Image (cartoon, rainbow, N blue to C red; front, side, top):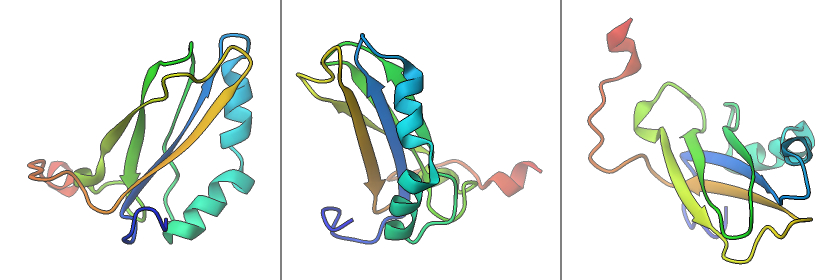
Length: 117
């Protein structure tokens, strides 16, 4: 949160498992309250922390989904952060990543979810 330099408005997480592992290995790391609650508390968040899990070779591009920290229906904050680490994960490694945004999408045009109900 300190690196963001502003309060977070959106957040997400990822686990990318090398080819010698299984997606469940990554899921086991990031889908626990002991993991997610630290980020939720740091962001002053109350919503579920959206996630992506993937099994892939080093250098894979992956998108971390983001949602608003207190209201998952705020559409301006439904976005993704594209990530690539050139030399990871190696076959026996797991990349765990967190992402946060200090605002929603610039120039977002979607109507509030309530207008469709």
